[in-house]
Length: 93
Image (tube, rainbow, N blue to C red; front, side, top):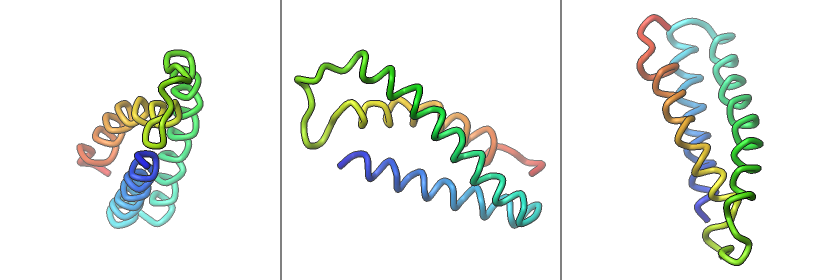
């Protein structure tokens, strides 16, 4: 259940990055922003998924929280920092 909320946050963040880049620079930059977020998400989830499966015991799995949820939560932390510096704080975009 938590996974879907995190995926919705990613969709909202990608739409924000696309719109900001499209309005400030060009349509091409908007698509590049989506691709950059997608690439960061794919690589980050692969890394945090491996880490989460190593540290999260199978006996703790439930409907609401599993190792995949932990990996997405672990991924959310560096993604927020990345998103802040590249899309929110960036003044010369």
